[in-house]
Length: 343
Length: 41
Image (cartoon, rainbow over all chains, first blue to last red; front, side, top):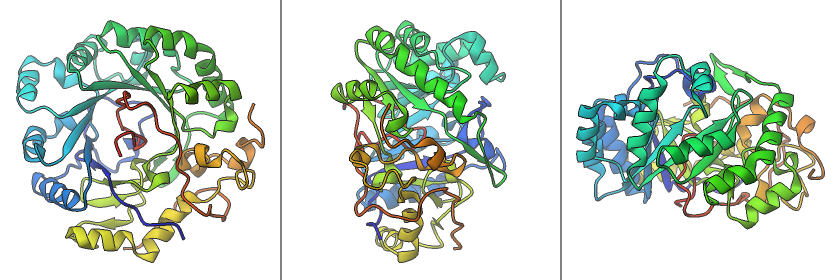
């Protein structure tokens, strides 16, 4: 059995409502979109995680700017723990909201860029207007503590256009994320075949050097897929430049996610698989650490830490690679995808 | 509470230690949207 989680980074899912409806969003499986965390529960969870020594809270949804108590919670956290807001920035385009937000902003903002151009944006989200979205992003990126993340999928993996867009909006860095399957109504689904995802890998590999130049090197890859599916030289270059992240809070057991009702999730993709709940399994910091150290909880985490493929057991790169995002293996068969040798 | 097993199509073998992975440059500020950001820990 592997060690218990030591929560350093905490994700608070404060609501499920959103002013976009993105095709690839992990949250689209939420039972209802009106689920939201009460302000009282959010305060209790902040007290709890500060008590266990967590360093950072990421506030996300849904779209957390739609949560009525966001600025109150920011004020509550100020001076106690750093907060990062993960947002699509649409509300920032509203002058009244933006001015209110500036009075009680987060320590950092993670901007979620939905598409590399207007045409592709309209295919992803028909709810919100492109120009409004750009106005919000421009405002978010005017704050020095903002970074941008872009999900690459077979529908849009034009990272050169995405890099140019970020620059034109005042940003200087871009984090590339990759599509993963989602659980909808208890059933795991992927919108794309592995062959389509392979095309994304190829396009990123081909476009990276040009996109990287646009951002003066500040282009980062979240290496969610096993490294053996990428070209070897491409991965070595990213590694040498500090441009790749592999593994996650789940693989390192350094994070914890709280859903709107106080349920504990191993990952935001695992909304339908809560492993415990505030007020039921623990209340105090000591009880939370004791809960995470329970055999049944550690065994649950161990399910996500097993070698995906027999080819991973003994692979000299496994510690660096971590076998890819465990969520991939809810849908795809790792024995079909993981290769013995890198390409 | 009952913990429903996630249907991971993995082997049943565990590494001896947690895989550490690799972090990005400290300059990166990713969104953390998918729990993958651990640049701050």
